[in-house]
Amino acid sequence: MSHLGYNPNLSDPVSEPSIIAHAPCRADLAGGTIDLWPLYLFHPGALTLNFALKILTTCRITAQKGQRIHLRSLDTKKEESFDSFDELRRARRFRLPLAARLVQFFAPRSGLLLETNSESPAGAGISGSSALMIATTAALARFTERNLTLEQMRVIAQNVEAQIIKVPTGCQDYYPALYGGVSAIHLDVDGIHREAVPLAPKEIESRFVLAYTGEPRKSGINNWKVFKSHMEGDRHIFRNFERITAIARSMHQALLRGDWDSIARLLREEWKLRRSNAPRITTPLIDKLIAISAKHGGQAAKVCGAGGGGCVIFLVEQGAVSHVATAIGDNGGRVLPWQVARDGLTVLETPASAIRPQ
Image 1 (cartoon, helix red, strand yellow):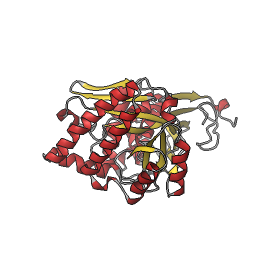
Image 2: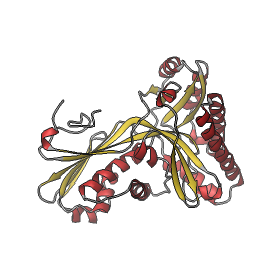
Image 3: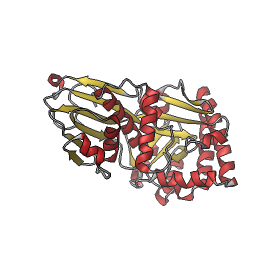
Image 4: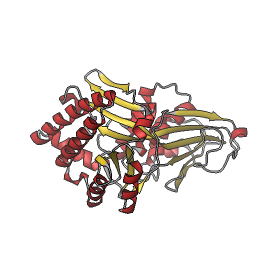
């Protein structure tokens, strides 16, 4: 995907200048779910680990004459229009709630065409919706001349997403979208702190396979059940999260050392604990793919996000990526092409003359 000029994942070129924002998805390695506030406050030293995927989400905003607001999703093929911002502000139901709720927050003073697109499959568990929240937040901030820090964008995107899905949202998904690369996200009493993990992207790309099971997951439902159990004092869940916290800390150190044997062991242990927390986190197909991958060089695997479907990430022996990918593809998984996204959020103002096929 070109970040300049014509974007083949958006609609046809338009005659007005546009603002285009891109944000990458992510794969999580350890410490997920505990990033829901206030769970991490009960587990000192909590952190999550993830890396950004060059599977991009995009928002383009084009100014329109008059007051009409037109929202369009290219990947879902949905759209809706409002004669004015006041009409949108009064509405309670939307075909495109992500775009509509963010437009409500930013309250533009003029008409616009807002187009979104995601390269992530539906319900993949690689934070496509959170990444798109970041891209859309950034584009609307630029369009409405709001000078926001990256952390302010994260807070807005996370809070609006919670309004949409009506359950608590974690913070980890927004940092890969903002920064790219590999992240250790420290969850402390004084706030959330993102640390870049200095691991070569090619090292990660040579050791992981990403596959879509074709079964969209419902992250909010799975996370909400675990969240409620924890907050209601379930000792089993609490002990599991204590161990998940320790695993994430140990994996952070193993990543810094490049100790892939320890990373594989910790990934297997975390997956076992997550299955204990929420048995429906897995499916027969996921179990089948993990078992098959182990016969072809797979060392460990886990679902991305809250599970119940979506994507699975497989850690494999050095040199075994193609063997594992073939075995997964032959047994019902859809292997996704990916790279580590070196960059996070990108926002460009594209003059009308530059929006043309290249």
